[in-house]
Image (cartoon, rainbow, N blue to C red; front, top):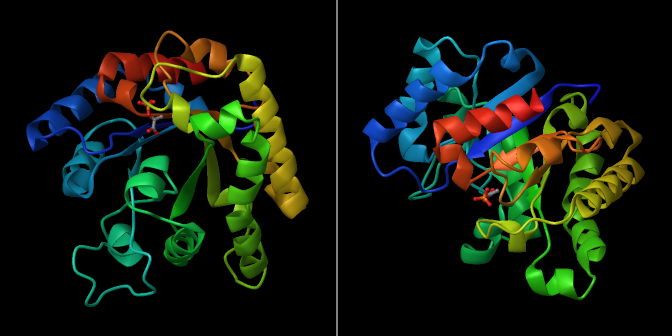
Length: 265
Ligand code: PEP
């Protein structure tokens, strides 16, 4: 239903636990995803740092055009140097990564990533030509107190700050380097999802907020994330302003993930 290709992005999180499973999952996926689906739907997988290279090799040797994302990158303004345990945007780009998740609720919650940190990470990603999947979403308590729009507007101030900086660079259109993933925290890994009407309203709100920041951001893809499964993907795909999905749990099963791709293709 969309004027542009949709997106189905797998967030594998800290899974699977072995390289062998990664290879098997990629083999199954490449066998199951119909090639024509990839003409209408951009499929991207985000393995852990440890599995980027194995996944990249599987993509390279397979027949499917699948994008490769990292789940994180270093916030320090450096391509290399004394930052033990970190991975830079430059290193990701060199490993043939094209996308990176930033602002996932698990990183905000367990690793205390605040807006300053997220802005630095996104700057570093843009500096190396990585497309950013910027995740936003309200908690259960915020949802219950009707604060969803206020929370999202505040989280999108990060984009406002970057749009102002971006205008002064040679990087081109920010909308083509940014994907927003709306993920209600209470829907992640819980099996609970908002109603389709709620998803539609929130996506419309995000689109308006982005357009108010900069008219060119009107075309930024806005994905839904949180307990997307094979059996609810078709309904979510019916929303005219949902440009795709970010999938956690169900992306670890090739059959489920392929069914989700088909719903968006
Ligand atoms: C996520 O963490 O990005 C996610 C959407 O998880 P799940 O699909 O498991 O709810």
